[in-house]
Length: 187
Image (cartoon, rainbow, N blue to C red; front, side):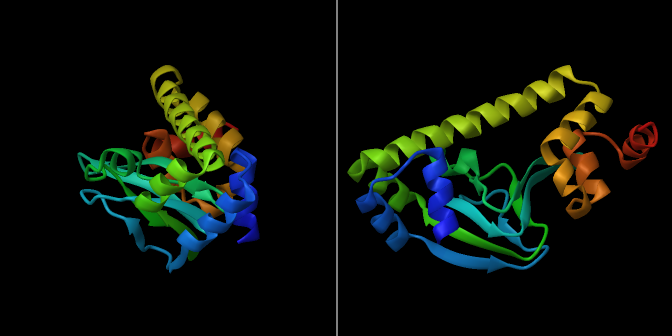
């Protein structure tokens, strides 16, 4: 749990009381490679933290899989639409490797925000980071061509190349595996 608190504190430092109460609220769950962490169409009211492993947000459209984001060790994630609006998630999250995940439920998240100013600051900064990342990814899809998106992928996720399949890389870039192979061969 030390890494968990360290990552929370990197986003925004918590008071000792908030840390103690947070640790009482979280639970740890393991997911096997290929197991869904949450499913499209279901409400997901959990804040996840990857202690070990790798996961992806993804959805299908017209028979093609699109990958929205990858999450590795020491990263938080949520199904944004579902977590905040209590709506069914519009995408799923899949464990790409055996993963150990620390989970905080929404009701505890809200209670901690109301009770501890330091946790509310963490929540605000976390949400700001989620929004910034979503906008950055959208801008990349709108303004960058496939080669530029691949270069951006390498900058953000290059250290994970051996852990991410070519199919998932292509799905993240919004291109076919054939197009990805062409781009990679030019490097």
